[in-house]
Image (cartoon, rainbow, N blue to C red):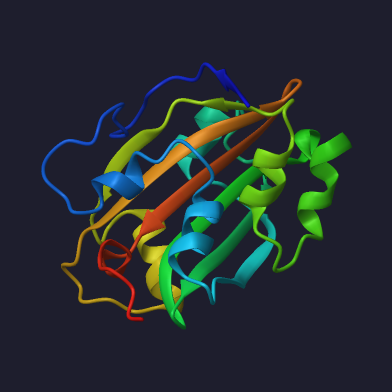
Length: 184
């Protein structure tokens, strides 16, 4: 997998700022799916929603989309020990949902990471990080499926994946439980 250049914007930073026990997870450059499978033998993908929606404003900028444009948005929960560990949110523009990316509409419970890291032609941009307060759209999206205490801050990371000139934005929101060792 190669790296692709993208820009930092709207509160997303190139480095994890501050202390968090999630730092090793946030900074993982390899396949998050592979790491979760290693940590949790019962790893599973729970599809929460997918369909045509308007991306968040900062997502529109990275994907070079006009403000009123809809994109394919997929939200899943990556599960371990029967509990949510990571909320994954992926966005791809209609014009990019072609070629090798066309399968993204029908992958169901297959982890997206498995497809991305299996293809050597896929280029990955830099990881960017952010603490998500309860007012952030991704925090709210997570809480629609799994309510949290109103003041709980979540850590997220995101990166842009490119296959030729087709772009896919993947954001992963980590639950605090991910930093705890699994129960064996």
